[in-house]
Length: 310
Image: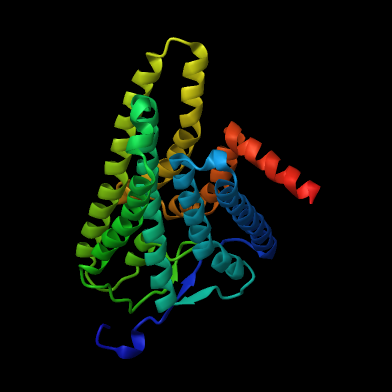
C-alpha cells in the first residue's frame, strides 16, 4: 500500500456534518450568524480599546490581542465549514487541510498563553496595586504579548519533530475541520511519535498555564478577602469575573478534548466540543467582557453618542 503512489491521499472528505439538506441549511445559518457576530463584536472591542482613553490599560491591551486572535481563529475554520454545509462533497486538499490544522493549533496555543498573561495582569493589579503601573508598563505588556505569540509559534514547531504521517488509505475525516487527532486516526504509517508529541504539547500548553491561572487566582481571592469594605471586594471580584468565565469556557472544552484518555474518547462528542470552543467561544468573549464591564459599556455608549451626533 505504501509503495503504491496511486493510493496516496491528496484530499480529505469532511463527514462531520450529518443529516439532510434542512440540517445543513440550519447549521449554515447558525454559523453565518456566529461568524458575523464574532467579527462585529471583536472588531468593535478592538476599536473601543483604541479610541477610548479609559481603556488604554494593560488589561484591555491584552483583551484586544485576544479579540484579534478570536477573529483569526474563527476565520480559519468557520467559512470553510459554511461552504461544506452547501456542498454535496465537502472535500479539502491535503495541503489546505494541514495548513488549517497547524494554524488552528498555533492560534489555540496562543490563546492559552494569552489567558495566562491576563491572569498575571489581574494578580499584579489586585495583589500589588501600588506597583501595578510600574510592573505592567507599556514595554512589559508588549513583551508579554510578543512572548505569547512567539512562544506559540515555537511550540507548534514541535509538531514537525516526528516524521510526518503518511495517508494512503481512508480519507473521510469524522470532524467539522482538519483536526489533528481525527487525522492521525487515518494515517497508514506509525503515528506513535506524533501521538507522544501531541500529548506532551497538550500537557505543556494546557495544564501548565491553567495551573498558573489557578495559583494566581488563589492569591487574588486571598487578597480580595482581606479587603475590609464590601464595595472594594465587589469591585475587585468584578474585574476578574469576565476573565474567569472565559478561562472556564476555553480551558474546560480544550482539556476535555485533548487530555481525556483516547479509550474514553467519542469522535462525535469530541467534534461538537471542538465546534463549541472553535466557533462559539470567540463570539462569547466580547459579550462576556462587554456585559460584565462598566468601562466597556460606557465606552460603547460614548462611541454610539459620537455616531449619533455625526
